Amino acid sequence: MSKPSPFTVSIPDESLTDLRRRLTMTRWPVEIPTPGWSAGAEPAAIRRLAAYWADGFDWRTREAAINQLPHFTVPIGGEQVHFLHYRGEGDHPFPIVLTHGWPSTFLEHVKLADRLARPSRYGGNPEDSFDVVVPSLPGFTFSAQRTDGARTHDLWHTLMRDVLGYQRYGAHGGDLGTGVTTWLARAYPDSLTGIHLLATIQPPNVPEEDQTPEEKEYLAEVARWRQEEGGYQHQQSTRPMTLAHGLSDSPTGLLAWIAEKYRAWSDCGGDLATRFTDDEVLTQVSLYWHTNTIATSLRPYFEYRYDWQRVEVPTGIAVFPHDLSRPPRSWVARTYHLTRYTPMPRGGHFAAHEEPALLADDITAFFREHRADR
Picture 1 (tube, rainbow, N blue to C red):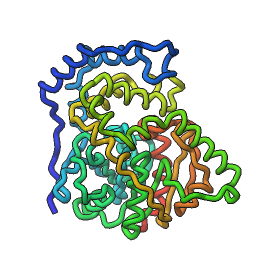
Picture 2 (cartoon, rainbow, N blue to C red; picture 1 turned 120 degrees about the horizontal axis):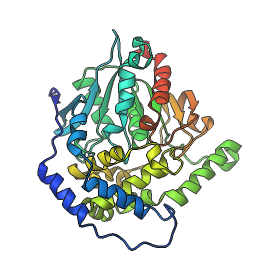
Picture 3 (cartoon, helix red, strand yellow; picture 1 turned 90 degrees about the vertical axis):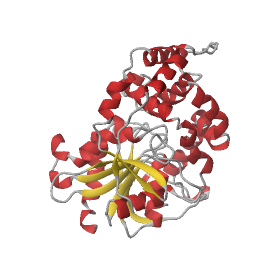
């Protein structure tokens, strides 16, 4: 098994020049008479962000900050896997792998990872520290997309056990990371001491007569969300390459597609700036743009398949009030061996970025019971 190699982000000047050219040549859509964001990405907001991206946003400064992070790459099964690896403080840091979702990148987990690895910086106990591994999903930014025979959870297990030497470890994930983390627990229950989630895999069809009132309300909320917000998911699941042609060619289109999700899915009260600065939004979008990975980031939606199995590994879940779904305790317990359920007071879909302290505290409390199991 190959050893990890340090990795440095270095976007060519030609890519930056091409981006500015494309932004300045944007052909803007004719606006339809709808207020604000009611029909999708607000034209004025996207024009403002695009203008700053073209003239004002300093990628090199952001790139230098990104390169202060502990980056590595390693070939696994012939595929390059990119990851951050934070070594925890104290004598016995506990290993954990954090898996991001869409339209996120590894960068979303940086605040959370630092809190988990170095709790004493934030008033915590060094004995609660973690060795934190933050891989980039296959086909996202600096990780190659999977070959047909590889599965993401298998890559993660090989990374944790065979590359980094962690025989027993924990895992956390939300969004796409929920599925990866769930599959890790199903496939390698003897190696996973526990998993912590922000969302869940649904149980098989539960007859209505067997549903609790709380579960019926939850399912009605899910149906409403799919009707009002689920168009992106349907498109990405059915015709991702049709969408990818536009998003890969137009930086303004890519910006609108991603920024609209940050606003709609975060606990921002309609004001994106309360949760994401312009620089944070544009850094995330730039990572997709300069690596040309928006098309491959849509692949998991197209390849998704439902395969229910109960998870017997101890499971915790943190439910944030503005996340895409908020399953009740009984619903989670239908699929998982649920041992911790935490309703959060605030926060949305991007909890690791929006509320890193709340999330770090919950992950720490959950795994405190499982540290002796490694």
